[in-house]
Length: 162
Image 1 (tube, rainbow, N blue to C red):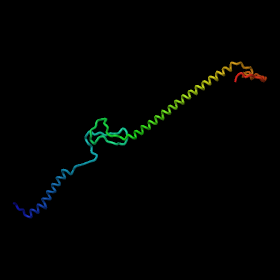
Image 2: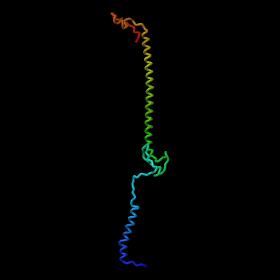
Image 3: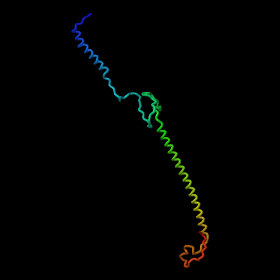
Image 4: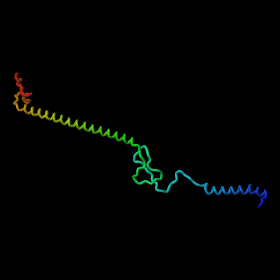
């Protein structure tokens, strides 16, 4: 076996071994130490952004990351409580509107019957007025003869209309 001198061993340990370690470290750093990473990189793949048609609280996500989905597939499940409350409020407002319509319709019918009653009374009074005009009036009761009347009317007057 070859026996190395102490001076050669010292040279190997102090110069050659550190040089080899620096050489291996530099090669490792050049190969793997320069990987660039980012959080907002662009992916060249079929990924689409989605936007909701309604707002609400998500209670369950029905798909996982990078899962392929078909058009129209359900992606999330929303909390139905706010939508149920909105529907109940709209139903109550609809009932109030229906009640208001029925009330207005009843008032319209009542007004129509009152109008018919007043029309009937007006027709009756008009007939009464025409009937009273048929009776002959004395000359002193006619408005045109009042101006020509010089003597007061007789003390006993029979009223033929009222």
